[in-house]
Length: 170
Image 1 (cartoon, rainbow, N blue to C red):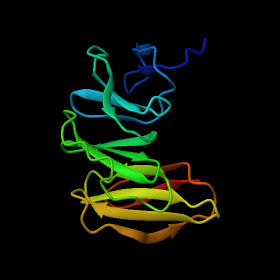
Image 2 (image 1 turned 180 degrees about the horizontal axis):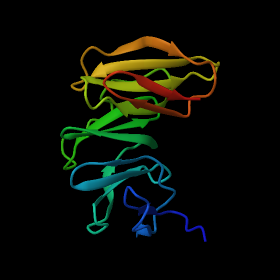
Image 3 (image 1 turned 135 degrees about the vertical axis):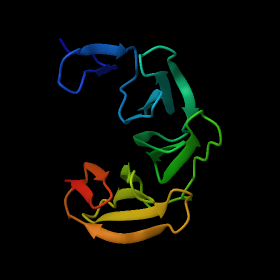
């Protein structure tokens, strides 16, 4: 049975499945995990939620994003999110919220990913004209390169990064 609006989990070997670790959510989309917390976006509500890794301590109104947040990423002591025409950043404790971390962007980011073993945030954009752009910035927001490289001319659906490569799903 499909249970909408929830976050589940399982052990890496597929056992210990919990279909509803956190429930009663409004269409959660992006999800990220730190050493101590789970973060998720509820774009229709305009908030990022947070809970302990065991599902307790749920705070659905942890960070107000103002515009709908889609993807989330955690790096070090910060949480990053892609929202309409911007990328936001806050401390993992909800402090230092900056809803325009990279400034106002020309188009809405389609996806965001953190290269955890390098120095960069990678942000993927779709411009609606079939051109997908990959941008990057340092974790402190400096060195923002909006036109870092162009990527595949199909709809961008996901982005991931490692120390050696940036991966794109279209």
